[in-house]
Amino acid sequence: MFAYRHAFHAGNHADVMKHITLLATLELMQRKDNPLLCIDTHAGAGLYALQSPLVRDKAEWPSGIGKLWDADESTMPTLVARYLQAIRPFNKSGRLAHYPGSPLLIQEMLRADDRLRAFEMHPSDIGPLQNCLKGLPRQVKAERKDGFQQLRALLPPPSRRGLILMDPPYEMRDDYRHVISALREGLSRFSTGVYLLWYPKIGRFQVDRLLRQIGSLGIQEVLHATLTVRGPLKDGLGLQGSGMVVINPPFGLRDALSESFAYLAKTLGQDARAGFKVMQGESPAEIKTALGIQSPSAVVSPTAKT
Ligand code: SAM
Image: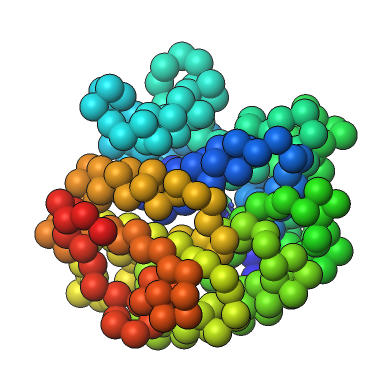
């Protein structure tokens, strides 16, 4: 169960697109004053040492944030530049040596009345997570609990405003099923919450089924963003790209992501199959189209507008 360690993947193309989507969503939600509850159901270890001997040889960050770190921020979409600015305080020397995961990025953005609850099951990752989040004891809590099951206890938040990030490892096929039951449970308690779900572009069958099941949850509005960095390898292994589903996306997210994902597809793309898609839907028909349920997901070329 605990074969997955995020340390190897920290800062890869999937983290880049996921964390850009997370930061943009949080920032747009914070345009309203009401306090926010943020829930990170699968938080990871918090902070990753990119040069550590444990990950060095297998590290994936060089083809992710490594391709952005030294680029000229003035030539980037604002959102990509702001993402890098969120990472730079963890690398004071200027050299990219540490990568902050989702709970740390959220913690850095919390306002005085916002809260973060983070969950992590791995026995080796929960300690480091609790250590790096302990700066804000009243606002932030990290626990070794099953994140899928915590939505029942935490939703709806008292302020009725919440962001829920679900980022399971999908190392076990059950994760796909658990995602749907957790979303169903969460939406039944808090239908107006903003839910961010990351998924890997690996097994076409599981992903298609996951998206179809999301489409049948009775949601009001969805944004679906994908970043593909390459075509499939001959052995069918490896991550071609990944997707983010945002249920109840805040206004302005689609435009912000479209510009950024176009840039990411060009900068992180590894072959001619690289591309992106950012689609949004409100009516049942639009939601199906956005999720690619009606027409199988066609990858948009890096230069095309969504
Ligand atoms: N969200 C993190 C980030 O963006 O920096 C990365 C999380 S990583 C993809 C998934 C994490 O979920 C792993 O650290 C794994 O140990 C943990 N995990 C697996 N099953 C879990 C569960 N049921 N509840 C909470 N954490 C779980």
